Length: 254
Length: 221
Image 1 (cartoon, helix red, strand yellow):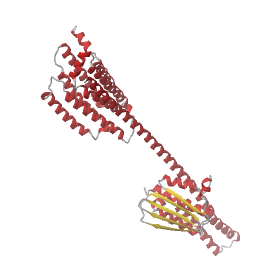
Image 2: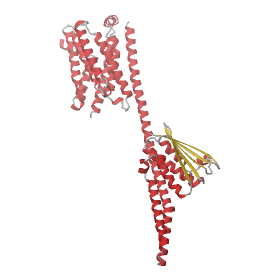
Image 3: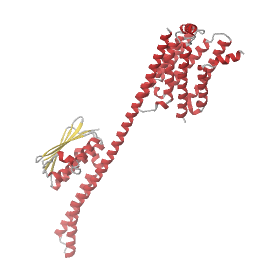
Image 4: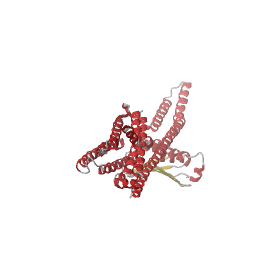
C-alpha cells in the first residue's frame, strides 16, 4: 500500500518534471525559430536595399546614356546650326525651323526619359501600361520593334513588386538592344488567378546560359533572378543560339 | 516548558519553508509596483498563522485542528486560482476561472459543513483543488508555448508559480487520501512517509514560489 502511494507520487512528480522540461524545450525551439525568422527578414531587407541601390545606379547610367546619345546630340546639332547662322549673319528661315524642330525633339526626348524614370508614374498605372509607354518610346527610335500583348483581367499588384517587375522588364529590353541583335521583341502579360506571368521573347542570336552563368560580369541574369525571388517570384530563361531568348517571369500579386 | 515544546514542534521543514517564503514575500513584494502579487504577503501571513495555530491547538491544547487547515486550504486554493488567472496569457480564460472559483468555493463550503465536516481533513476539497490547479497550470504552459511572441520562461514569474503549483498538486493528489495507511506504517516502522513526501513537495513548492517572487521583483523594476 505504502509502496504504491510512494511510487504513484513519484510517477506523478516525474510526469510534472517531463511537462516542465517539454514546455522549456518547445519554448527554446520557438526562440530559435523566431531568431531565424528575424535573421531572414533582416537579410531580405538588406537584399532589397542592395537591389534598390543597384536599380538606382543602373537608372543613373541609363539616364546618362540617353542624355548623351539622344538629347546631347540633338542639342549639339542645334548649337552648330545656331553658330553657323551667327557666323554667316544670315538668319536662314529654313535653318531656324530646323533648330526649332531639333530643340522640340530634345524636349520630347527629355520628357520621355523623365516618364520612364518616374517610379510614381509607374506605380500609378498598371504594369502592362507602364511597359507599353516604355516600348512606345523605344519603338520611336526605330532600333527595335517591341510588341506588347495582354491576356486576362488586370489585377491589383503590390506597388513595390510592380516597380521591381518594371525594372526587370527594362533591364531585359536593354540587354536585348545591347547584346541580342534582335529586330523584334514580344512581351506578353498573362493575368492568371495566382500570379502575373510575363514573357519576353526576342528573335536575336541567343546565348549559352551555362557560359553566361560562369561569367562574373555579363547580362545580369542573376540580378534579374534575385530581384524576382525577393518579391516571391521566379524567373525562367531559355535561349537557343541563332533563334532567340525567352524569359518568363512569374510574380504573385501581393 | 510547554512554550519550548511548542517551538520545537513548530519548527519542522514545512513551517520553516513557509516562514522563509513569508519573509521572501515581505522583502520582495512589499512595493506598490509589484501589483496584485503583494497579496502573497497576506496569503503567507495567513498560512503561517494557520500553521502556528494548528500546531498550538493539536500539540499544546490537544484539540482538533483540522478546521483550521480546511479553511486555510479553501482560501489558499482560491487565491492560487485567482493569481494564476492574472497572467496575461490566461486573459481569455479569466471568466472561466472565476466561474471555477465560485463553483469550487460553493462545493468546498458544502463539503466543509455537510459532508466531510469541520473536524475531518477535507480530502475531496484537497483533491478537487489539486486537479483544478494542475489543469490551470498546464493550460498556462500551453498558452505560453503557443503564444506568437517569445518570452524567457526562466525569468517569468508565472512560469515558476505554475511550476511549483504543478509539482505540489501532482504530488499531493494521492498523498492526502491514505492517512490511515501511512499512520499504521509509521507505527510499524517508525518511518513517517507522509512527512517525507510532504516535506519534499513543500520544499519544491516554496522554492519555486521564492524564484517566482524574485522574477516578479526584477520584472517590475
